[in-house]
Image (cartoon, rainbow, N blue to C red; front, side, top):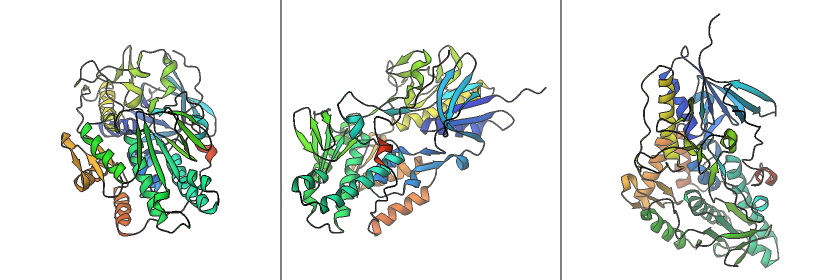
Length: 439
């Protein structure tokens, strides 16, 4: 009897999982290993461009990297990982039809990422809109355009004001880009002439309890970003949080009530709950790994990305932040080290210093600090789009075509209503039922 090839199973195909598999395909031959990816979708989502999907700049397909064409040697299992049996090297999977099965593994790489972080605030799960998936981005774009239509049709000035008020909670990377893209979306839509509605009637509000926007990034990015948002008429409420969300209103911690039908929740994320029942050491909910991205005590298990607490060798005593930049590079390092554990190559410590960040503020505006050199305006816009084109694993020409078309023509702003509100409830999103995990 011939022994089967070692099987490497990667849970999740976000930045970390995708780049791990790409590295393994390049380093190991089909005779060396069997590669398996477990993911609910057949694409890798390029999350940084999601705000442009909501803004109507990009077609949703542009941010979806097809796995079957980009990872031709990887067997894709469409499903949700629901449990890990560490002792027997078995992964429990529930497929898209709800059927359960087990996948054996010789090496396991956990890159399942993060889920939306819900705070204990009344009404958030029922009435706020999430923003982590293509489905949520498309729904939010349709919802915003629909509110303008409904505002035009009503004779009640109070209802009209509420429908033309949009609140984004969270002034981090995602929330700041989303409010900028959303405000430009409504401005473009109003050019089609809505009776009784003008640009001054539309109100965009950005709320965060931090003392500045982009609190996790450099101050060199925060100040010009804040000036750009306020110059466009966006109301930025800092050092303020949400106390309650209802179907028709959001109440802030300073007792301000904002009548609205739209609350976009961009507060942050937390590690995937898959790791919680493992009984392994964690830091802030993230699975502890060593500098080689291996789980202590389980050399056959690796983790990377948002789900992993990776030691920051550049800043001793800290763990790397949950950013796409780190996830992508950790995925590559995990691939190198998995291959090394199977006898190919030499393992490598993860060490990476941030090269700077880019924040697209829609239109001709952006802020960036490549190599920590602060930029704003058109230079930052060029750097921002250049970075995304380099980091995007596929669809580059199509993305460029959409950007050029947006410069030369008016946006085709229609809402299809393909995503129901019940499909994007925050209370149900990112909350798969996990099976009991055996150790």
